[in-house]
Image (cartoon, rainbow, N blue to C red; front, side, top):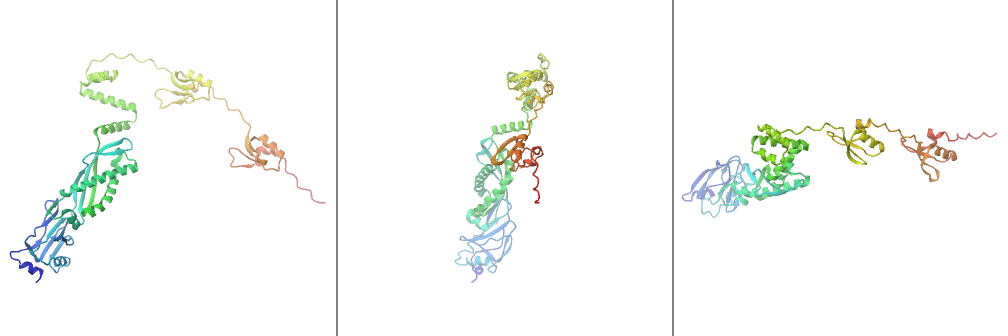
Length: 436
């Protein structure tokens, strides 16, 4: 008797014509079709919709996974026939197995976040406690392994039941990868966000082999939404960015003073506390004018401008007139005499300041010096010699090898070829007379 006739002969059995799963929830990963005490109709249909897979299970034995399509449930159907033939013995019920539908669609927008701060070693600020958060997505790529390793005998399984396990592994791996990347490239916390995409690619590549083997899942995306820093560190970084944007400390001080004046104008009660804290007489007068307070007595006018310059030289620092600085330069021109005045970006040498340089005569030109050459002659004689000395050595031994060099020459040359040294060299000997 065939398998189907055996099933049909069971008293009270109900026959299933179509086995399918219509999922409206969107968060269900596994659905077990209710088979108990029902018989599968010979010639019935298994409908697997896009984004689904179906797996038959009987007493721990799994069939292969069936992807999207419509399949005839018959012992004549390849793949299904071998499975049903393997369970066609000792039937106490019409069918003792189960049919599981597995969602293979991407489970998107699953949120993750570090439950507690973790320590990040910043190359600039040292150890910093930070938090991170973002989203991830995955899908079932090996339904049979997912059923065996994760679901077990549950009739309904949602993504919430496995997300906790996945998040724990993702967070541990994220912290390790973040620390490794920062250590390799010396990245500080201000520039981490520029490396999120690079971190994401390495993260997916490193995590997926383990996820497929352990769960039958593939991680399809992992994004880092951002980092949360301690409030005190965030305040410091914000101030530093403001200073970097302004560049000039004096401009930053003026910027802070302007902010303080604005805040005081919006809150008159701040005026007294700011004055008591020593914000400054000038600022107090400006604030009083803005807030309608009686103007205070003006400070006396500053003294008339002076032509004194800041001087730094061998005798130390002082404020001197250009004439006084010129006198010190005259005493020792070879020393360093530096000058500075308000508004200059840096110290200048005295000869770069016209009001000083014009008071001193130009330096005398250096005395002419005799031309000297580096000399290498016979018997290992070497040294620097004047043209006259080399001429004398040429005259004493004209047949010897006399080599000279000085700055401007490409290399060592014969002394007798240098025009400056040829005047003292004897003329060449005449050729011998012919025989009579």
